[in-house]
Amino acid sequence: MSDEELHVIRSQPALPMGRRELLQALLGAAVALPALAADHPLRRHAENGEAIAQAEKKARAADWKPEFLDRHQFATLRSLAERIVPGSSRARVSEFVDQLLVVDSPENQRKFLGALGAFDGQALKRANRPWVQLTEGDQTAILTEASTVETGTSLRDQFDLLKGWIAGAYYSSEIGMKDLGWTGMSLFPTYLGCEHPGGHS
Picture (cartoon, rainbow, N blue to C red):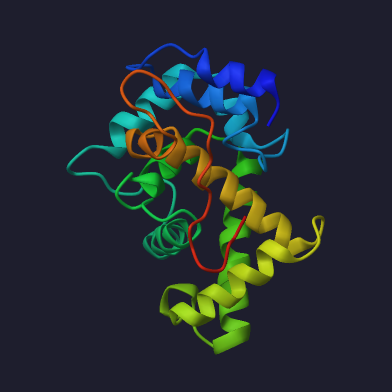
């Protein structure tokens, strides 16, 4: 990590800071989200404070229900999110992502659904059942393969797309901020990444 990256993180104002501001800080420093592609949709969302605020408000609602994803797609995302970044369910990552997808472009929506479908396809290929019905071992095997195959291959690209959404949503949440070392006064320049034994980095 360069001195410049350290300075960017350490020079951020003490919280409370908005989710948009934190996401912009993380993206700008390229420390917490190093694998996020330059054209990842989350980068555009980081520029739209109103969309992020609305997504966060709706995701926290007691009567929340998916607006973009159907029930099976949401369950798949929730499972994948928890496996890629443990704690995602507590941080309501899937709810937040669903709300951002509602206002995203048709192309980005299509790519997201394609990525979810790719993991269901791998699950069906491996065990003849959808992702949410796989054993932990089978899920680990698929995620390990997806995260270690060469960049530019279809499965790796799908994994990177989903991981970008999930990690961005998680580490810009209050729970994720604490994982990054937020003490109430500052953020420390560390990125825990995926703590799963498979090491989906």
